[in-house]
Length: 131
Image (cartoon, rainbow, N blue to C red; front, side, top):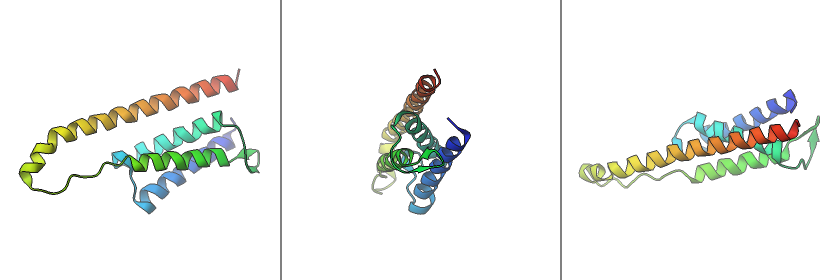
């Protein structure tokens, strides 16, 4: 993978993440920029390695598959945002704390599983491409 292609993939991931996080205000399930951006970056990188190059070509870089994959992954993460429980009072809030801990643990597990899967996809893609 050429350096220009890697720079393009990083720029696409940053633009999509910034658009969703700062402009639209969708932060994904983690409410932070970096986890959202890392998942978008890894999905765009995996798409650059695995998806058949189609569409317009700009200086040898096919930009449509990574862009479409990044947008689809951002939409998927945006839809995974949990809704806060309705404000019913302090005692009701205390009753939901154990449930919230379970939800947070599930989201953290989901994050690390997705990161591991994308890293495996990228490593296999690089191994296949350079052998």
